Image (spheres, rainbow, N blue to C red):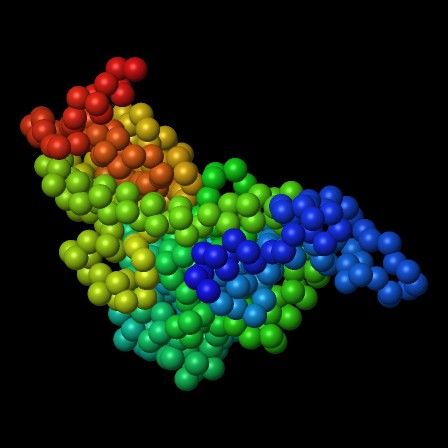
Length: 401
Ligand SMILES: *Cc1c(COP(=O)(O)O)cnc(C)c1O
């Protein structure tokens, strides 16, 4: 059966009422017939039917044996780190999500868990950075905001030879494009806030495991630490996830057109998008991401200053200035002063996050409208007003309306 058909029919109609939408079981506890005799649910931190429906669907989407939903992407990441103990080490991608870096450095180093960073885009760096204490390898691919790509299959093999688990933060690609468990990863985490939810209307996270034992440990941690996703947000995430394939396909098609346009604009220095043949690991991305390259595109400006980037991000009309990504509405942000401002300037520039870098989350508006929007903003920082096919009178009329 086609994967989209399976996704849409992953949850049967409600057995009690026939409701086609999973009911929101807004309850804290469940009546028992006798002590320990219940219908599979005893207390809503441990299990809730609405959350269970979401977990069932996302486990199937990622090809895992189990999934556990959390109150945020960071709570999901936190649960995975809790698989470790004091003295263990994590080897993480150097271009890691800032919130994960903060959690690792400012919380877990205090508990005796060390984190080493490597440029995982070259597998030789992964081999070289492993130590006898490395118990977990942490990847993001593509990364945020420079869209670096790492080879999941090769790194899983290296990790397993070493006795380390591989966890992939699959937030940017989403299971519509990339299935890390298929390539040997042990664990996948998501900020479901982004593409899984897909509508910029919730905060959620999820952990998916390839084997029963790890899945049971994550479920134990979920119940023991308690950072569960609420029934209502579970329902919203499930509702969003039903259209994942449709949305991500369109996000990817729009993003590719935007990236190709950016490459032609004279104000742009460099475009970061795995779908472009100029991307250094385009071939790996093309092999491990199927059906598109995602909705996030970053670019830097020839005038590499914070002022020029600020001018651009404050001049778009469809792309709204906000952190986050993955929703139907296009967003843009300036990492140096927004998502990555806590990183010291020299370290940030070293990681490839230029002062003028702008990150786009390309939404589901019409691609020509989005291109016209970026073009008029870029023209403000470039004296030569280059006309392109996107500057049709129809697009111009949009600004006047
Ligand atoms: C947003 C994000 C997170 C954190 O998720 P929250 O839902 O905001 O807690 C983790 N990893 C990546 C790649 C993200 O983009």
